[in-house]
Length: 202
Image (cartoon, rainbow, N blue to C red; front, side, top):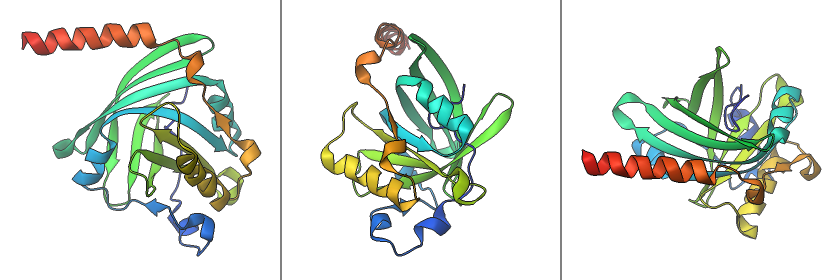
């Protein structure tokens, strides 16, 4: 299954250059700096997404809840990803690495034998970010939204809705996650206890 952030994409920057009020608060990050990576460090929750591409739309709709940790490795241009995803009423854990293409503001990961790319978008709010999908024109545009808490404020949500409007997707096409359906709590707690013991023993 494609991770909620791992999307086969091309750059959304040309779309963001349009002088549209809906696009005013979006910043396509290029290049990605160490400061950018530090902003992404820590725990994030998958809030919602909307995709015109059938494959990613189907995958997104199967996700009941998801959260993950980003641990940047500046010197290696990588991010260690630890993700907990609830789908099909079960918890799925995945640990992998994300490649950072600093110059063009792109993140990528390998899954199912191919590389998936995502363009990083930052809003004016430091506790949210988005990943964009745009390839083959507007037919397959898409975007996913993440926050440092499972529930977002109205202001944060508006930034996402404005971004969705910017790329020509209707609000009715958005699929949201539901923290109440998260089944990864016990596994996450187990992993955190194991990590704590490892740190104490080192």
